[in-house]
Amino acid sequence: MLVIRLFRVGNKNQPLFKIVVTDKTKPPRSGRFVEEVGFYNPLTKEKKFQPERIKYWLKSGAQPSDTVYNLLVSEKIIEGKKRKIPVNKPKPKEADKAETVLPETAAKPQESPKTIEPEKAPAVSPETVIATEAKTEPAVTEPIVQEITKPEEVKDQKPAPEMPVDDKKS
Image (spheres, rainbow, N blue to C red):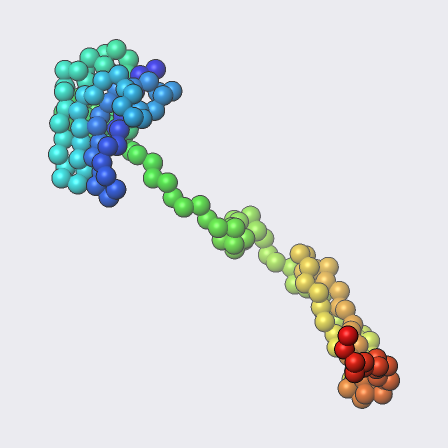
């Protein structure tokens, strides 16, 4: 299938495009195309077309790319409305996906986590700390009790036996 597309020939930061007819399966590199039918300079907005050759290739079944189609419509070589060219938007990062709230979850009321009432609370010594572990479902959280060692207990432990130091080095 033949297509009419742009072929970049400009330097870095100085784009210049040839408008060429080429096979869709073979991109137009290094001058391998069927025919050159015009050029376009986007910096100076200079355009030059061969309207009779473009109409010939369109009748032969060549399909213009979206950008070339819009250029041909603006130059009134063909009639029609301009096509909307899709713009590639950056994909959201994984962190942004996690923060996004789905409408299904926003509509549901959130359940509150179970709490321990003061009169039913177990006796807790001053050396213990109650910590809760976060889980995916707040209704299933259970308290975790961890003991904290006092600095005095650490001092009471016997130190590790010292290794004899060899003064002679070999």
